[in-house]
Image (cartoon, rainbow, N blue to C red):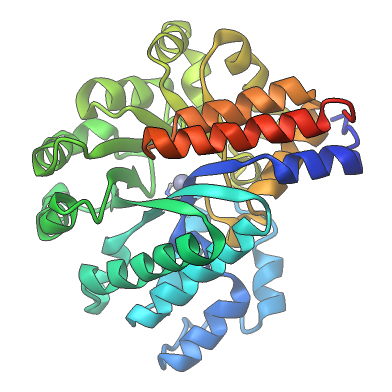
Length: 355
Ligand SMILES: Nc1ncnc2[nH]cnc12
Ligand SMILES: [Zn+2]
């Protein structure tokens, strides 16, 4: 596959673009060099066959066979997170790293069901994450929203109970959105129709999204739209298998949150150039570029932008369009969007004679 150069000036431009991230799992930001110290701090014994050192673990993360192969590591990683401080440390480390790559706004996922079976209360998880979000705002001027995800491989009744136990967090808008993640097949979106109905009852402004069309077919995407009434799709790369669905996504301006390094490392595509980004641009389907689980897939948000540039060789106008669509598709208020759009205009202006 041909690879283009990402020139240093283009890299600076991509760095300075005010970037919005809509698809990052906070548990997926657990770097190996935090995982082992947290295991020690919390007296957690990792499974016997689990790599014993940061270097060994990094080697294992170079490629995953598929989504499930990755999830097996991801859920073991979750086990070292127990105290509010752990959740704070995890999210703060993410905000610092992503801010250093030009992150300005983040809508971050977390999986309460990967913690509650160990006796960790949802309130503990949210308290740690909220503290990190506040610090990111105060010290880095990064705005953020928390999105709670349901683990689709677990029984629906358990997911409903998890939602019920977080009702107040939604009612008080400490949680802004609901998502659906984990093993996509054979757990189609329609299994969770009642959960999404319940979330809509919690607050009229609750935002809804779901992972669909990562390993699952385009039908997963249309069912998430029809039955869960989501307004955003996470991954959604297989949407292009259905031309009517593509036309619908474009008409409704439904954003796909695409994660290039993730799709590569999980072997959803053989090469980043196989992602249907050109087709989506031509069809008018908005998408954003995201890191998904950066500690596992070898890159934060700018790394994903650069990986796309090396394969697609976009000009500044195309990048400005992608960055603008990410701002417009965000769940922050109009005032914040205007601030981000003003920053974007300044960066485009600064680089107009250089790229
Ligand atoms: N890429 C992904 N797909 C589904 N579930 C996930 N949980 C964390 N990352 C995920
Ligand atoms: Zn994801």
